[in-house]
Image (cartoon, rainbow over all chains, first blue to last red; front, side, top):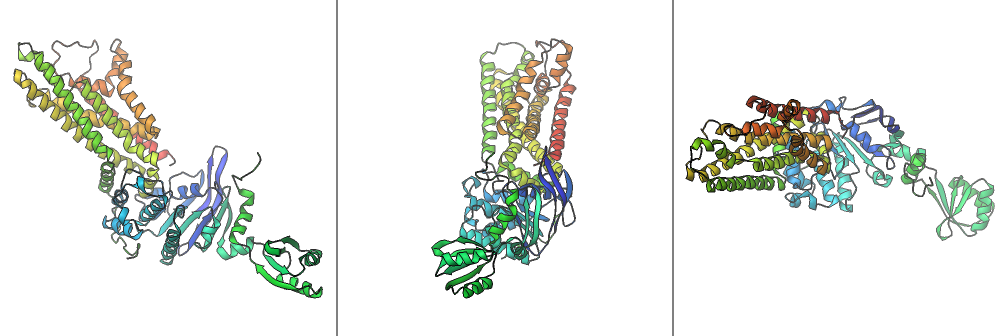
Length: 303
Length: 275
């Protein structure tokens, strides 16, 4: 379990993380979401004791990580796949990490095989692709067989097969009762990976809840309507208080009215409908909507 | 086999020797390290051959005692000391800077949150390797040089009074320089800047302090390079003696103080910093 309480990190006057409080429980894959610059990596670094919080606490299973002598059996972490020395072989890199925590070296070869790097184990990391480095980093996080796992953007650079593998791995780790905390700036990545979400923006907590609740809370649902006479239907629906936008292939995207109500109105006015499809807001939309106010670096923003 | 069912059963205790073993793996798994050591050793030994050949060629018959210091200097002169400063200081800076430059330091600290222990293990492995290297290099250079000038009957055995001190001073100079490099690497973290400042501190600072004044002589004597030179001056016959001479003991103390201070500064810096 990871407990973050009133965690704050200031760099000069700017607060990278601002009074953040949340709990990551075992047995779930918890997504850690936020736009670029939201403070995700800073938070993870404070959990790992790499950065000292300005105030507040971050504990792992009730203890401060900095106070531990060795870390790998408590927390397995992949902060950045680039945090390796390109001159070493993948095997030497993992053997040094394993040895420092008194982990039997046989586990290194087992894990290299498990993550699909057995063939590249004796090659220098400098020649690895980003996807291979992610796999190496994941192997490093698993070395100590830890109850808590942290991954910062682990899906970057992975091919589709790799993404599927990682998702399966995370679910399996969670099913074994471990705490799995995975950061991402893309909701679409988390949609199929996480079952709980911690969402932050500009260092502040935006949401800490289940995936379904998050989507229900944030999403505005719409109804897609295909009508024989779209222009007349638009007039009727607008008069009833809906917002109607033209969609592709003559379809209408209607918000503000439920699908049954749209059907009733069409019947009253003897308008023929070809299709009437309610749509839940996608998680991506929910995420964009909730974080819209807290995006740090917005494309096309005038300054 | 599942990646997590291969559970490591015995919950490992935090033993310092595991950190030493890990740093040992890190040290030798970079391909350039052994080459730098090998190349540096070759240059020192070749310089010894060249110096000894010079001494051999310019030998003027006389009492062998007059050649006592010259026989030692043939083995390891300031060229040898320069190479030791370069290799030792450079490698010392390199072993930490390569972790900072690559970001590996974060992975290392996530594995070993006890930062002081991590740094001490790094320093210990570096000291051990460089001491071994220094002893092998200065011992070989001494043996080769004495064999060459032995043809003139002025070669010295290692059992000669002073010869052991001469060889030991050269051997210990390597880890002292390496620890200075390590400390500056932790402080600066940037590859080129760390190596350059290590060289500045070891090579150039001594040349600013002459023995003209008492105070500047005192400062000079407290620097590693000058301390090595004092320790290498075994026989002061026919040598220019400083008006403010240093003692041999102060040379050893200088070596010790620089080593301990370098590790202490590095350890306190790495503990306080965000990574």
